[in-house]
Image 1: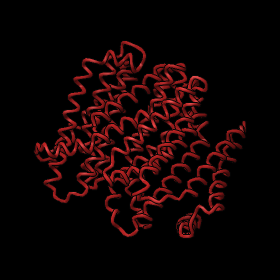
Image 2: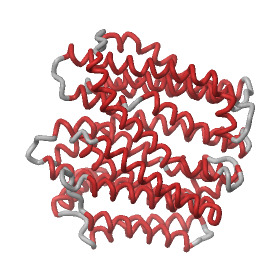
Image 3: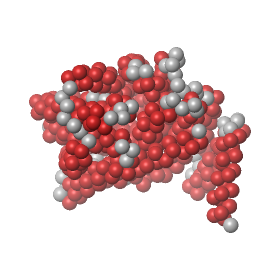
Length: 489
């Protein structure tokens, strides 16, 4: 079982290079955006980022998860190529359809999304971003199916580097407006897709099969709708905020959400990419249930411990990456968002149960219920408590989503959780973060030193409350004997 965990970590780490690269780009661009653009423009950029993700999800049509599900169990290469061709056909059709829609509705959508007119061009760019990013999923998924994480990473990094270089060129050399940020974001995947065309053609085989297309649509449609509602759950609060608080407050909240989602990009996303493939390979192994149990605990521990580290030092780090002092207040919101995302990580496991039983409609139901829960609470409390209300409601919404997943998968769930350990991790996180906020030490060096001690104290309390099993303690001792003594001898 330890070997399986190590393999999952290895696969996650390789896939994670691409996600870390994407996140690194965000950190490069945050200080640029916040030093060049006003706070209302920052708010517009972040609102548009959320908007194009919706369009992307409609065009993608659940293809990334569906291709893995349809192809992972298919041993015949010829049949695999036919399946991939059918998915490519759906994505290409969706892309052309939505680009056509953009040509007619860009002006109206500008008013709807930004509450301002005159941004029809950037709305059109958002549709183009979505189309090319969706089509780029085909070579990326082929690389995953062929277990080529290095190739996967190269494709992602190629897209990323072109994107950054174009943005820097438009912003600093040509001094263009923020709309060209989104021009760069669509040009990059378009160029990358062209570079990948020969690779795509190698792994697709023409096969216009109506029966297969119907089966794909039946499976993918609820996934797509669930993803759209999941995005709404993740971002509806910022669109509600626009009607109740200033654009500056919206900018603060969106910056906080962006930085607070760092654990999703560095940990959860690569882990999910790896686990979606490993899950099917491990499904019939004798140690499968134990593997899933420990995976859920380890993932939650990694998410929450990383959140603790970021929360301790974010008040200093944010001043480096966010160049506009008006946005530094986001450091008070970030620990709450980080905590919320820990429960998004746990929801991965009931989701895998639903994929296994092909009950994707249940995922949709859970997301809809969680979204209704979030919208009602946001409308009730945002007008009184502003962005803090949104952040706490995010935690409650993700908790509701996770517990709903457990409830609906209770008859066939494949993961037996360790609730005591999850509660210990959560309670200690809340207490330690609350304590550091209340400390309010003015001397930076003393503050940093105390927080280092608190990190070790957090781990000590975990040990004290029986979080670590004997075999885990033994492994930690072996690790320290092997590496630490060698380094200091």
